Image 1: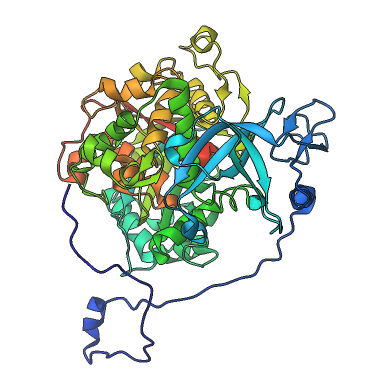
Image 2 (image 1 turned 90 degrees about the horizontal axis):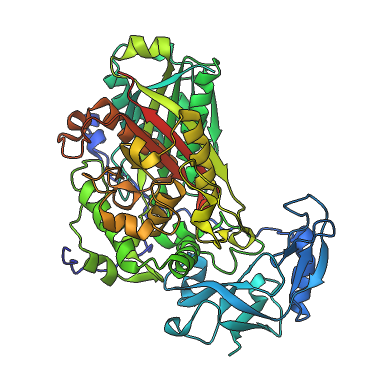
Amino acid sequence: MKKKETKLPETEEGTVLFNVPLPEDLSQLKKMSPIIIKWPYHTDYIHSYGQDSPFFAGLANKKLLGTKCPKCGYKYATPKFHCMYCGSECDWFELPLEGKIHTWTTCYYGGQEFLKETPFNLILVEFEGVDSLLLVRLVGISQDEIRIGMKVKARFRRNSQFKPTDVYFVPAE
Amino acid sequence: MRDVYMVSGGVSKFTKARPDRTFQPMVKEAFDYAMNDVPNLTIDQIDGSVASYFSDHFQRQLMSGIMVHDYLGLCPKESKRVEGGGATGGLCFQTAWAEVASGRQDVCVAFGFETMSHVNTWKGNEFIALASDTNYDYPVGGFYTGYYAMMVVRHMHEFGTTREQLAMVSVKNYQNAFHNPYAQKKMKITVEDVLNAPMVAYPLGMLDICVMSDGAAVCILADEKMAAKLTDKPVKIASVGCGTDAMRMADRPHGDVILLPHESPDDYKGLKYPGVHSFRAGRMGAKLAYERAGITNPLEELDFVELHDAYTSSEIQTYEDLGLCKYGEGGQFIESGKPNIDGICSVNPSGGLLACGHPVGATGLMQAVFAFWQLQGTIGKHFQSDKLQIKDAKRGLIHSHAGTGTYVTVSILEKPF
């Protein structure tokens, strides 16, 4: 591979500029460099968890809630209000607080919102007798110690942020 | 339904950033290239268009589709936008096919683009991660590479797939792209380079993952009568298929494999499918496309495949979904050399997304253009080198794939002349 050149990292800092020169000969304009501006954007969404709200109320009260289909019996570890298989409205039930790692990864980069939290571990948890899985962070373990099938248990934030990260898992072994 | 032919295509060179142009003239570059390749075609003869772009977030411009359509001089002809994540290009291609197959249009333009350079790479990753459930998944992971990493970790667990096998995919695709003038990245790399590249989400490193790109691509489709008027080298769209799966990986079932004609239930005793290790949508799309084109043994009946290798792992998983090998044998398949440029069924002879780049809305159409040139036998003309031309290519497959395997399109293209 080609050796990387030494160069300063690009940043998004810039200078406020109110004018640029324009050549008198307009035929030169097609050769002009593009003008690139910074255009910030910020929005506060009024996001409702809707029918999923009990899951977050559960986390605030140190309970993991899933849903189960009263008709076909399918059990969802990540709640679904209507059953994907038979269309019935599901009921809430309490998930066990221990499970096993179905699969995992360690993220060394991430989306900008989570970049400052890297590295972090993601796992999909399987619970005994439950059909679907749950995506959570696994804390207190390094990449080389994580194994599929490892027993893990839930922990909850004391002060709820009403985010799915109010629950995180740690090794149970 | 009527037979549909591809009569022309064009690609704007994919690159990290195109600050010199906004999206409309970028698409026009690809459109003009395609129009110049069929000089008998006039704007008057075009009946409409289908627009393909994935995200409104990247350029913070809604209704970009109509802005391209008007820039190309296509108003007041009919047009619509289709969107389905990473598969947007493939869905656009199939929608344009449906416009012509149904008899609603005789000539339809499918155009696609993405301008991902308008935000930095990590903001771009954040936007892409919004294509995961924002109640349950985005706030926990918020990173697509992390999602695909979890899928391949399970694939490695089920089947013994190795990081070296993943790396071989990258080496192959970069090797091909070296001779493709449209490719964004030109590097000669080794398995060691891939393994030693900075880790992004275990086991995927920097060279296992495609990059962000700006770019555009255009396909022109026509019915048999118009195709005959426009070119002596039309390419027939033999069939299209599409499959789907649940957005949340956590919801993927653990059931039985959807079998292709050359497989039997005995091949997969005890395998829970698709789990998170395989893409059921890819298998479903392939099954439909094969049935409709009469293909019973894809490895022997396809001369090449252009598939959605956003990650090296997805290429290995997709070999299996497409039935080029059995489930679990994807790692051995890359080792066998069968998908090499001179192999029995070359996979990503163009260099794929890994090396060509992945301006999302353009990608599926770029694959169609490269496949079209392969089947026309005109790679030499369009690439200024026939090094990547597959000899006597008669039938190819293009495969477009959306986030964690939610929408997957498979289309079969054939040389009729």
